[in-house]
Amino acid sequence: MQSDHVINYVITEQPTAVDLWETARTLGFPAALWRLPNQHDKHLIVSFDEVLPRVPADLEELPAGFALSPFDNLDFGTDTPPRTLFLRADVHAVVPQNGPAEVTYAAGQASDLFQETLTSAAGRLVSPESAPTVLVSLPDPDAEIQYVQNVAEAVEAMQRGEFRKVVLSRIKRVQFTDAPNAVALFDKLCETYPTAFVSAVSVPEKGQIWISATPERLVSVDPQGIFQTASLAGTQSAYLPDGTLKRPAEAMWSQKEIEEQALVSRYIIECFKKIRLREYLEEGPKTIVAGNLMHLGTRFTVDTQAVHYPQLGTVMLRLLHPTSAVCGTPRDVAFDFIRSHESHNREFYSGFLGPVNINTNNEGAASNLFVHIRCMKLEGRVATLYAGAGLTEDSVPEHEWQETEMKCQTLLRCLAV
Ligand SMILES: C=C(O[C@H]1C=CC=C(C(=O)O)[C@@H]1O)C(=O)O
Image (tube, rainbow, N blue to C red):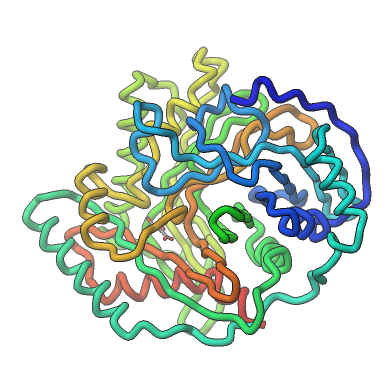
């Protein structure tokens, strides 16, 4: 894709992430802002495609940019039209913790317009000082009843042996006094969740901004060709009843949670088996702290150079999505159950997102794709939060509802000032 798009770069310094983000919004250009886990630098890219191309998620072919895939992207790589949205890095800013942003621009008319707008007042409209105040949680009295009912039906289906695991989700809506400042919220999430992948993606063609702080890596390939994926499942609060933080070693996991997470690991291993790859390093499961929550996590690592498999990232991405952490086991049966029971459209929730072929720390190009959970969709003054829970035949419906409430808190606690 885009191989005919000639990019000559000029580099300038100075503008802030807010300036760049607001300039993109003023001009109707898509933008993505992100910070990788355990890193300080923030990145922002702007694409000059007002309507984003839908691309095959091919990490070898794509130029530098940011991918955003919906959950419903099961058969990618086959004959169905591609569904992954791609923001090409027409503008790429690296914003270090201290010091000015370094910005790289593509050449061309759109770039000239962008830079002119940036230097005029239009790009400096919003102050990033405060995060928004939640005004009202738009109540949905039937939401809990409906969710609990769906879980009960799933449990019965699993007890009849129709499938082993399904992840059912729900939404929660809140409304603000004014359209919230996405960059301020992004900054707050970065501060609160240093180990998460934090992002804000503006998709003007849909009138949406998606904001997330996800703990779950789907596929990454670093500049040295080290591939990683992870299985994450099982959830409990990171706090003891007296409000103090638990130590990970204190976390106790039930048989249901151990099985729930093992199914995700099994799913990943089955994907390796499909391509006859045996040389992977498996570490875990161990307790992972994800902000207000704890999960069980296992990490899988492959040296793609040692196994002579440079395209492993793309191949595994296609096999993995959607993993058993957001869909279920067997995958297609769980997918159909989700489709016939959830009344909302997941859209980009439980899809995947992240930077593709982006040069980080001057070490070379890396791709880092994450499972899009702990996320919300902003449309003007209304935010829709999404949360799901992995169910097995041992699930207790009310507990699963409580779990989705805790997952919504990951973002909600950063929305209230
Ligand atoms: C589907 C979600 O989380 C997944 C990741 C970790 C733990 C999960 C669980 O315990 O159910 C889920 O599989 C979500 O946050 O919406």
